[in-house]
Image (cartoon, rainbow, N blue to C red; front, side):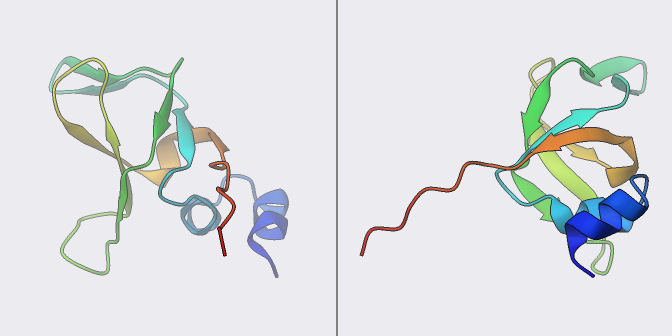
Length: 95
């Protein structure tokens, strides 16, 4: 079953979102992300995925890495916090 069909079947599946979202895609959060009392990301903005951290390594959970526009630094976002995403436009390859 393709990723799009999996998401259509279960739109809340974090596994399907993890597979569907790639580096360069834009993600939107379901709510503002607040850590230790500081707002790190806004639910009203799209953030470009800079990297993906897989929990199979040393990470505690699968996460998309984005750059915050509110604080200086990178923020890890769980697929469970994603409410929407846009695929990056593909650049045609020159041959």
